[in-house]
Image (cartoon, rainbow, N blue to C red; front, top):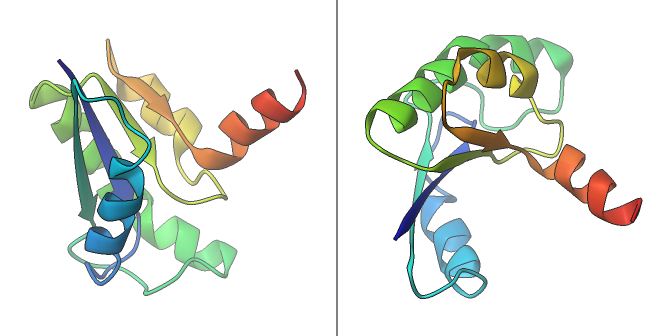
Length: 108
């Protein structure tokens, strides 16, 4: 069974359940999916400054996902905040985010 963690990098859990319900429709039956948000931070990431605010907590969430045995983590923001940094600190965890993934698909 694969374990995937979707990290919504905002400081509210308001969207966790709707995101999980949507993603559940696309995952395989043998995949466990969890959705988390950050304990603190802005309600949205409309400004570069907000991206800087969430970087540390996002990286902690990625590291915790690896320690908790997840196979992959998704930083769930189209800006891909902290994607490169998250990959640097991950040893075996696959880390991805929507913008890079979408651009790779679009280019094929």
